[in-house]
Figure 1 (cartoon, rainbow, N blue to C red):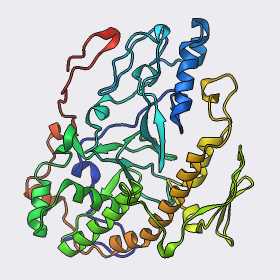
Figure 2 (cartoon, helix red, strand yellow):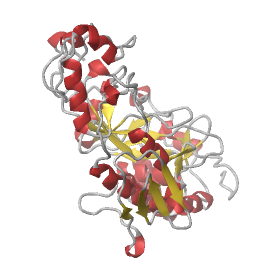
Figure 3 (spheres, rainbow, N blue to C red):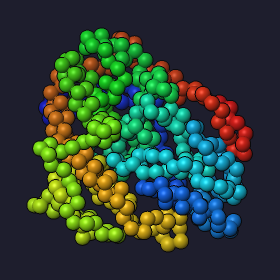
Figure 4 (spheres, one colour):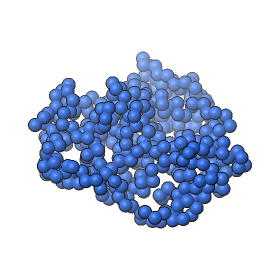
Length: 404
């Protein structure tokens, strides 16, 4: 049976698409202003839009082939928004929702399909408190970094660089029902390893072990139950950090260290730098420490996470556009988010060598032949399509109810 060498490829690693068959393309917003790091800016942008005269609205909307002032759109599942053409839109802003805009960057989105070129309603139908999402990251040769990220909020799915991957919900239906796993795979793995294998265990294993090449994400399935158990435990820690902890249990650096503000951040910081010797993050004239080099050097798809997070909050917007409606000064909650992000990236960087060690000591792998013999492969076509989910009526364009 083919195995794995310390410096060679995972010759029998399975495509992630065969393990979690249903996937959805990234959202395509079409315009940036319905997305922001703070919800208050979105409500102010919406108010400015609906109170503008009709001749001004078109320029503010930034219309595309998919979305114009004259076209209505259905409500997103589970969200309340108007369905009439935007030319007649009025009233308060639909309540913004938390989304993952990019790696480790949670922002807010106006959940109005009239503003979004491709909102992927099938994702909104299954997004609830029981759901988890895997987001494949773009492939950049030699860049390193995680192949997949996980989140509990709805992901936009765009990769910071490289060809974007796919979004894979853990469950095909609301309420944590019907795992998005190849039929028979969990039973097969449970029998091989002698322990129950749950959907969350498979997701944790993927986070610990997945790699990405130019074609797709690949996941090795070890023969050794002890290797599986070790990887699942490691993946649970990765998942916990991707979700920034749970409840009151928040990530903390070991030894009592924690980053905090040593010098106040300016009202409008324009530059982000890192002092390696002092382990300090320089936010304009402000200073945060300790910030280990591992946090500063953490990249996804070849892009430094901290730099991108900062740029998305400080990059200048074109005057007169709705994107220019934003906080006049740096909000305190952004500082708290930045401190937490530094902690998360530092702890994830500490796990990276453990993930590399896991991938280099896998031993023999369960390959396609074994899965075909167990009738797990080929995956039926129905498992690659979304489930039929319509627990409540969905309002279509112009107030008509959608029929699925």
